[in-house]
Image (cartoon, rainbow, N blue to C red; front, side):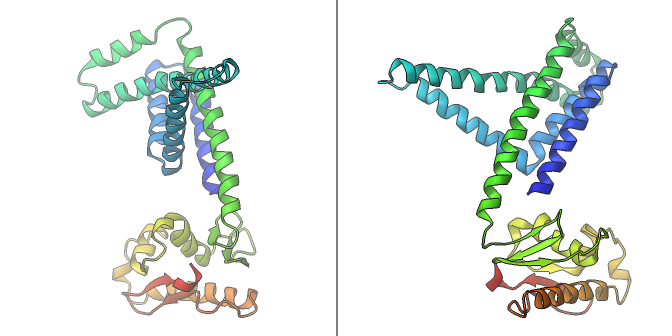
Length: 271
């Protein structure tokens, strides 16, 4: 979670900085398009935006609640102003994203769409307003990311999960170091594929052919007769590390087989 959140922050900041230094108006709009697309498509930011929307709806509901005293009314009204400010700045960029999406779909065949968009943001203060929109969104989303990382970290006590950044596997309170150096090993890649890329499908079987293509970028797996051995050995390595570092308390963490149709799964009793 922490590693994913940091990557999202970094990408958002990169796009923000690119927008601030870009002089070409079309390219600025392209950056806005990429920025909002990132927020709308990444599962973590999707969840955060949905939560912020739901929180806004709750606050709006409170504002119309009867029986509030003056102090409570002022507090709620302040919350409404704050949340409405965020969505106002967000909509500044969302409008551009929507227009650019249509322009992309029609491959700029209707130049009038771009001209209308340019006129909409042609005021002397338009660039500063959009830069502020980036900053407001970044600030709010970063706060939510930090809170979510902290809360999820607390929830993970006693759980089984893989810390990709530190390359540490946690198994119900047991800590297993996978990489002892900066080098990314095959064992690390397989655990990343299972616990990070497929965190919602931990009870599934994962075929070596899928891991080879999706995580190792091996497109010729099926054409190489003994290619399964690479993934089989990596699974053996993971189980050996777990066995040694847990004083043999955790046995057969991964269940796997041999052959071109080889696959691996996590032993259900550790999930």
